[in-house]
Image 1 (cartoon, rainbow, N blue to C red):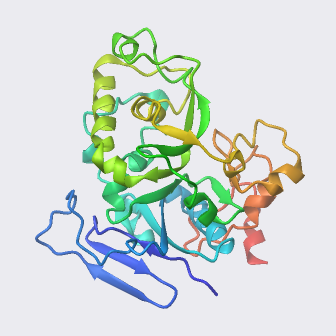
Image 2 (cartoon, helix red, strand yellow; image 1 turned 120 degrees about the vertical axis):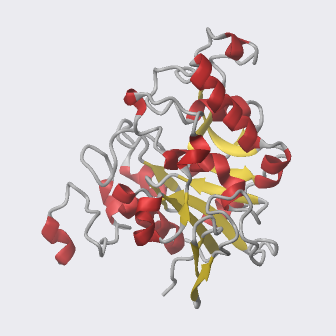
Length: 321
């Protein structure tokens, strides 16, 4: 049976590398600070082009979601996928992968009680892709509330235009306050379609060349001073800086690789089963109540051996059968 592979870029005291035939723990050089921006130099994992790097986060209360997503990816591809799993310090005993440092976000996000979920540090891991995957020229980012039904190699090999990211379409309306002078100066149009940041393929070479992380941090910090983001949408803390920085720097891919709003849209079961990636974005999650097509998520659910994660709509005895 194929095992899950996970590569953490050694931003934590320990780094676990899992391969199909190899399991070992690399201790971090104590001379390197825990939250350094210079990862421990490992043998290049991606230079040969034979591996597909994917980043996903693992919140302590949603570990089962990340495991289900990873399970679905591995079960539908023969490619050598390497997962970088980013988690909080408090979760590391369970996941033993990369930490995200909350200090990286200090002074860059407002403590808005109405957007508590979106201001959790893990939500910003996608802003630091080259930091977590330093050896790769491109990488895939996945939210943990997805299931992949297609071969992820197809998504990874999608053609990327120079200096662009490959993402899915949505609209600027509801994310930015177009009355603010800093937004007006950008020349953005409120009805311009752009991407959803829950699933994307990133050109990491251009990300580094253009200092995309630095640009994102600039807009995050400026928002704390000028309140640039609209309050219309709940995830407006994460999406607005991405919309600004990647304006006209992204392109669309096959929409079957990102079927969203599974709680709100009445898709046919045939359509959903044919989709290559399902995303339960929004309030209703497939491990909770109210989401549609939860049977497709259940297919990839693996019981948490620690007993901490359990779909609340399932009876506790279901996992014992």
